[in-house]
Length: 67
Image (cartoon, rainbow, N blue to C red; front, top):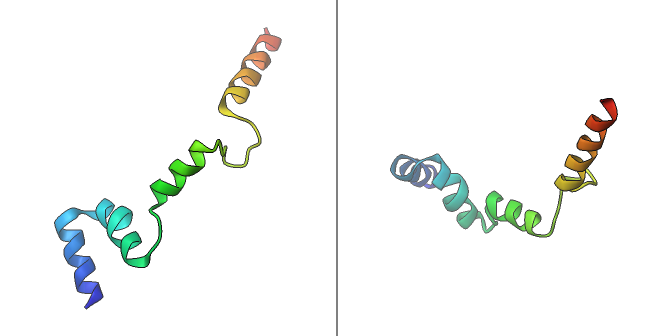
C-alpha cells in the first residue's frame, strides 16, 4: 500500500517533491535542504577549515606571488 502512495505522489508532484517533502515528512526527518541551510547559517564550510573568503584571499596571494 505504501509503495502505491509513493508512486502516486511521484506521478502527481515529481521526484523533488517526494524526496524533499513527502518522504521526510513520513519518516519524521528534516529534508536535506533544511539541514544544508542550517549548516550554512552557522558557517560550516564542509570541513575544509577555511572560509570561502579565506580561500579566495589565499588564491589571490598565490597568483600575485607567481607574477
